[in-house]
Length: 136
Image 1: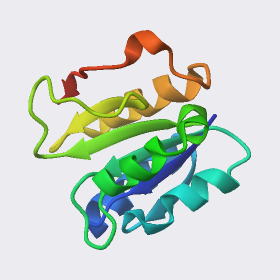
Image 2: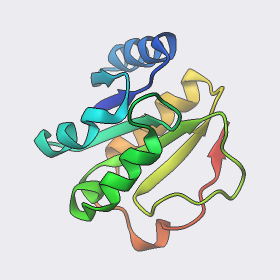
Image 3: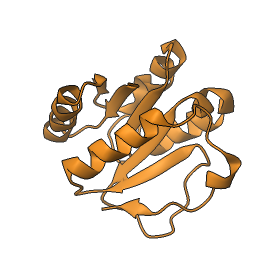
Image 4: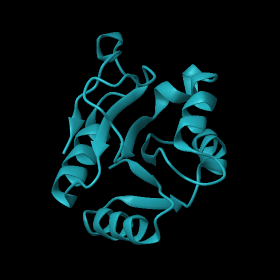
């Protein structure tokens, strides 16, 4: 199974996701802001599913997306999932963003999404660019 990186400033959410994913057999790392996401992905030797909160102190999820957009080959190797309470239907994200989780979401939804993304081919297809549906 793929590695998972949980990037979330809310300690309770970060710990809950980490624990639940570890119970499902995933190797999980976590960060409390986006400052080390790009470096972590560069160092990864395998695909990483990134659960990325948008609203965080210091380096936001939006800023992480900007940094990843500047490195398209790096972004294409991994699967980025946006997490936020402020996602509106039809909202557009960078092409490399694979899905959006609308907070609050259920653990069942998050786990199923991570499992699905961990099994997909490494590079996202061009047909997946554009609008994403938020997963409740």
